[in-house]
Length: 72
Image 1 (cartoon, rainbow, N blue to C red):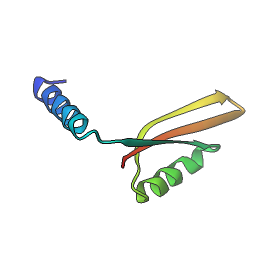
Image 2 (cartoon, one colour):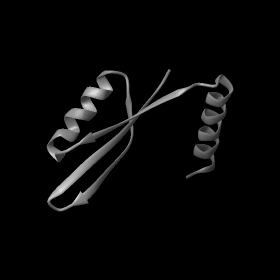
Image 3 (tube, helix red, strand yellow):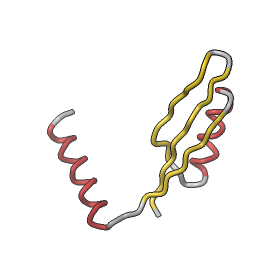
């Protein structure tokens, strides 16, 4: 990360803190990898942005977890 990028990120963080912007978080479990894209599209249409994605389980049963956020 360059110094300019680090400064921009710090500024954005402090600006949000000053406003005391509240964030809402929602975790969504998707059971099949084919439905992950559809779930992301649906949530983004409703104003949410994908924060992180992870998958867990064994080869026979994998669950996909999507963490979405949006400001209130």
